[in-house]
Length: 517
Image (tube, rainbow, N blue to C red; front, side):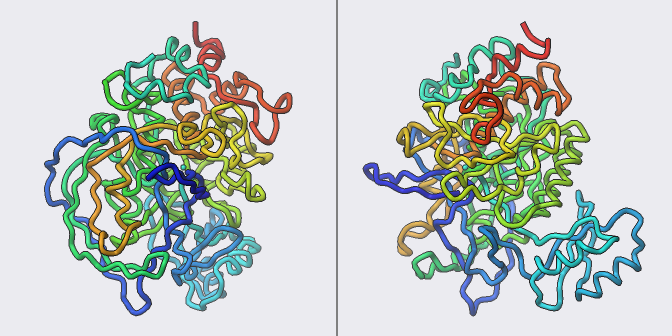
């Protein structure tokens, strides 16, 4: 996420992009990490409250760059004491142990939804260097460091007139063909979690150091209220999974995943907020990214490449037919994520991945998106602004295949972002103010925010893919083909590195392939 701040009255305008780098949260050097807890106190909660329209904002994600567990490399960061290894089928266990012994490595216990091993290193050697050596061995299919993943940010609903992004893709006429999709289709949101259920939960909030060196105190065990986002609806969620806490409660502690879920499937014509694209489909929250509060609460796991890969396999094995990946990272390639996406497509799931927000930063390759041209049924998504031109941050690259609205605050102001309901960030980001005002967060209050980024554009593609699935087009490669063939050509004639094959067109896609009126 690339932060861009400028003043607009009392609210700072900031850009939602791939990975936020505005807040550093670090545990004090002399303090040992406390055990994280996540304990249900009550299943009962008041309905979520929508506090109305806000200005532009974005959820913060600490880079942990001063955390000694991480090594920085080429814009990304990876864990320093372990790596991911997949041996070729048929490799004997004795041969595997012998290879790992050469690098002072030990394979950990088998993980669910994983066809690879997490190898702990005892030598203190750089895992990326070890991975390169292991990759040269004939019995190793791939080896890689454990890089950290990041988010990449006519209905009667009262805020629908402010959702300029839907007319841009001719969605209203698309809804004339397929109005909101079908409950037979499940879309998985691999993200920071989603505001999908209520209750009160107890966490242990540990001490941390803020970006300016200020010491924020431990709050100890705190009971925190949660609620379902009012415009998502509690009955639509299926097979939720949290790979950060290793449970079935993928709470969104930042607001990114809930905003993304809103574009895909926020409810329509219910008198609340705005609307989503596929408002009748089922939603599967799969939490694979940790946030500031996960860090403060000392979550047992972190959102690295292997976490993302396991989340992909989980979603597919539990019935998801569209996978939204509004996330990514820089650094070295991600073969473990590529293998998981290939698994998804081969099992009938369409995958949309953020194309990257490095358009004004030398176009560093987006490692989760760069192999999209080699996988039929997966697309890498660029972002357009309100004027239908490429958003300034949107990565220009040979792997970009399609474009969708992502917003651009710099060009169009705060109303040039993508508007959806999400958590009330004023009540979530209590760690951003003075230490004297620091308090426990609340996750039962909501507001409507403009966000921008390829995270947002990717959600548009997933929503349209869900409509196509509902219309009867179930082959992932065919969905990619119709999205590209029906796109509105922008930029240079034909495919180009800014827009791919062009801007998605909902009506043209739903009328295509002989499936519509």
